[in-house]
Image (cartoon, rainbow, N blue to C red; front, top):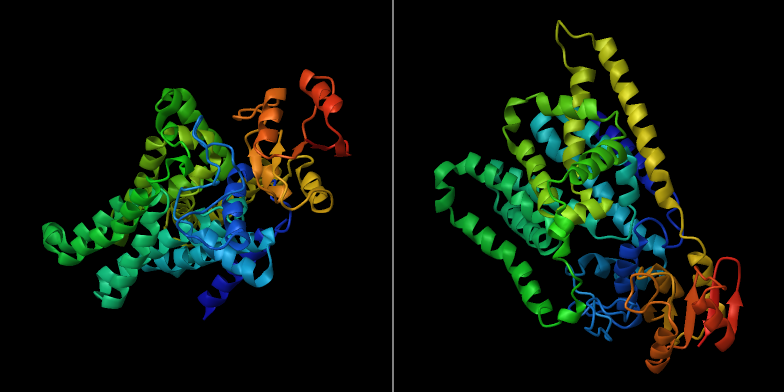
Amino acid sequence: MKYKLLLLAVLILGLALRLYKVNIFLADHHSWRQADTAAVARNFVKEGWNFFLPRIDNKTPLHPGVPNDKRLFLVEPPIYNSIVAAIYKIGGIKIEYARLVSIVFSLGSIVLLYLLVSLYFGKKTGLLAGFFFAVFPYNIFYSRTVLPEPMIIFLNLAMLYLAVKWLETNSTIQYFLFVFLSMLSFSQKAFPLFLLLPLAYLFLKKYGIKTFLQPKIYFWVIISFLPLILWRWWIGHFPEGIPASLWLFNENNIRFKGAFFYWIFAKRIGELILGYWGLPLLVLGIIVKVKKEGWFFYLWLLSIIIFIFVFAAGNVTHDYYQIPLMPILSIFLAKGANFLLFEKHENFNRALGVILFLICLVFTLAFSWYQIRDFYNLQGGVDLAGAAFNDLVPKNALVLTGDSNDATLLYNTNRFGWSGGYASNFPNTPETIQKIISLGGSVYVTTKFDRHSDFGKYMLQNFPIIKETNQYIIFKI
């Protein structure tokens, strides 16, 4: 009962931290990716649910020269988006509901971490693992974003937990739950596939060489990968809806360069996630060996590091790519903390251990929060421009945005159209405006308008202003 109450306290703390700015406009850090995820969910409500043809708001081609007029967005199967859409159907389309879906999955991950870690290290370490997962600023922010990652982390943890339980008990129910969760996990993003390494270790530890003679293992492999294979086959029929992805591996040959190691291990893991002072606890947790764990958790950590190296350019470019590290980092941090707080050793000063833990905890949270706090800031003018559209622009208007290829502004207008401007197929030029008009566009909006540029003068001379403030401008074109 004591541990259940403590776990409940950790969950309440995790929930409270994740509710910070939960109802702000979708214009915070990495909103460019959140906007597409949120648009799919919103359009499931606006246009009808079609799991196999998810649509965003953006008509801008995902590949140069390949039109995407149907606004297809075919990445992972839209399970997360469908759940959000179902909530929207009940309570209305509000971005805080989408964030709450992510938060619920994150809280579920805390419970699963506690259960999984307790099997190997006891309930104290399990609670500590859940605590670290609950309070790290990096994880708090990404646990309330409109991204499928919080759901995928939950699925991964449930898959691993049920794998361990099935192998311990040989329960048929747990086996089929394990298979089902593997299907869901592997059908989503790439990083769950790398967890095959610790899973293989569990199988070999249980069956040894006879692993290759187990029908249940072969059944699991076939069924688990079938949805992924079928999904990839299906979306191959619609190449215009598949974002470019080859660059994620090693664009500019970044892998193994000094910049790669600096950005991943110094800036992201050392500074952003661990706030420097989490490193002693992490190192301590890695070197403290507990007999029952074997190599399971070490191979789990290794699998995510391999993922980072394989998708080197993606991990350097996007800090949310390091989200898969959070569960395993929390586990090793918990091991280190447990050693300082509870381990008994005649040559170890317990009081100094507690003081060291508290210093590390306070400093790591403070320095990580110092880096993360700006993630909650909104892109200037995007929220106000979006709000203005509700009163000033017809619902069926097709909109061109001029900020950049980032679809955040387009999403906040709640209209279909094109993301234009910097790095877009529709740069801010007179030729772009004429092309958009020919495609049926009727409104141009931007938060980055230079009245004295050639393009700015062209717009002011040729098109009436619907509304202008010091943060945005809307033209009727």
